[in-house]
Image (cartoon, rainbow, N blue to C red):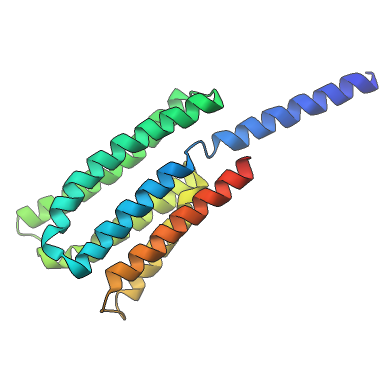
Length: 186
C-alpha cells in the first residue's frame, strides 16, 4: 500500500468519524434556545402568575414541539443527513414524555393525586426525560436534566421564587449545552 493510499484512507476515516459525531447532535442551537425561553417563562409563571400556568403550557408545548420539528428538519437538511431510525427514536422519546405527563394529569382528574402535589413529580419526569435525551439522543440535554434533578432536591429547602431560579438554571444549562455541542460539532 502506497503512502498516498494510507493518507486517503486516513482522510476518509476522519470524514466518517466527523459525520458520526455530528449526527449525535444534529439539533440546532435554536432548538435549545427555544426551549430555554419556554422553560424560563413557564417555570417563572409559577411564582408570578400561577393562574396562567396551565394555559401557557397547553399552548407552549405543542407550539414548541412543532417549531422544534421544523428546526430539526432544517438542521438535518443543512447537514445533508436524514436518519429515519434516529428521527423515530427522537419522536418516540419526546412522545413518551408527553404520555407520562398526560398520565399525571389523569391522576389529578381521577382525584388520585392532589393538583398541588403535582409539581415535583412532573419535575422528576422532566429531569429523567432530559437526562435520557442527553444520553441517547443529543448530549446538549444532559446538563438540563441534571439541573432539574438537583432542583427536585433543592425544592425541599427553597421556597421563595424557587421555580424562577430553577427556570433560569435549566435555561442556562440548555443554552450552554447547545453552545458546547455547536463548538464540538464545528
